[in-house]
Amino acid sequence: MMAAQAAAEGGGGGGGGGGGKTMDRDKLKQKTKSILSEYYEIQDMKEATLCIEELGVPGQHADMVGEACDLFLNSTSAAREQAMSNLPTLLAGCDAITGDQLVKGLTEVIGMIEDLRMDIPKAAVWMAVLVGRITAANAKKLPLSFLNTASSRWSKMTRRPASPLTFWSNLPLPT
Image (cartoon, rainbow, N blue to C red):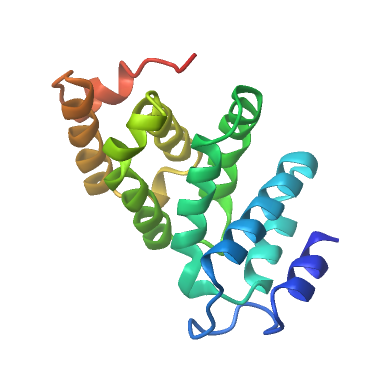
């Protein structure tokens, strides 16, 4: 159901295509939100993957990751808790999103964490937990170099210097 809807609203293109087609940021955000909502409801990875592919914008999958993180960070407590349970599984398990696209999208969000923390004080902790859960769901998708860089950045932000292993194992759970 959602795959057909995404294809119909995505402006044509068929399944996956090349990276030439693009979608404006507002439309991409709306499509990402729609795919996430349906995924959270029915928990069908194949359907979510098909929806993402049928949008026909593989060159913007990293942007979709960023939009998913933005929606996660700016949601209500209840919606964020639901996303914390479901978003890592989707980002880690969706074959339409490559490891490089996942890293690029997460890196862009992490690069804005200082600004985000002004409006969302726990943004750094929530993103760290999200990245930890993505890694737990599929460690092959996030390279060690990304995890080292991310943990170093978060250690500086939280003023808790630590090795990456210590950082990830002692990460406080958000409340």
